[in-house]
Amino acid sequence: MNVLVVLIPVSLLLGAIGLVAFLWTVKSDQYEDAEGNAARILLDDD
Image (cartoon, rainbow, N blue to C red; front, side):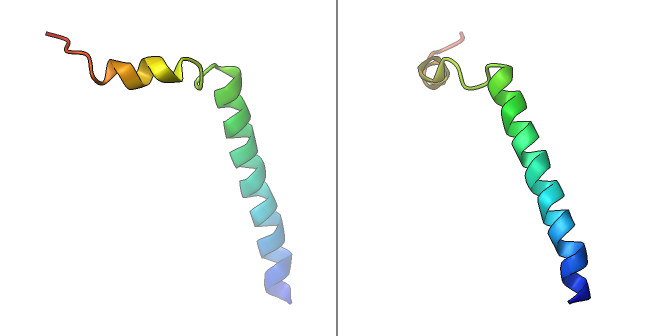
């Protein structure tokens, strides 16, 4: 039972960190132009 006192806050903290990281990537437009990134791999830079 004492383990739950530690594991629950740790899991909530890790979930909050993951949510903040996801929201930061959305806010900084990391997911914009998905097709451009896919096509960029196929282009030759030479």
